[in-house]
Image (cartoon, rainbow, N blue to C red; front, side, top):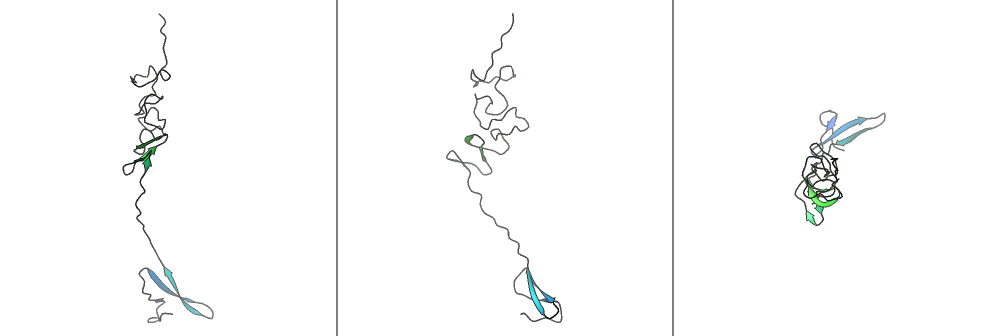
Length: 127
């Protein structure tokens, strides 16, 4: 047990961040160490790989396609502000454009060059 210094209730221990405290009981006196350990670990983030492609830092895989996208962007499967749709990929012609700005339906005011006949609805005008 470390020597008690000058009658103080704290004794010295040679580790940074530790403190000895005297504890008095009915028939004993012991010196207890309390150690405050703060650790901060910096581990490199593992590379995100989508379909064999290593993504740039901070990128993620699209929800339903093996391509890298930025978090919160088109393809994450969540309709974010500014998006009309988000089907989890960045492919045209499947009912949601690659930029998520068109649901690829006829009459939506957007010319969808890659829309397929199954995503385009025909409109018959009465004449």
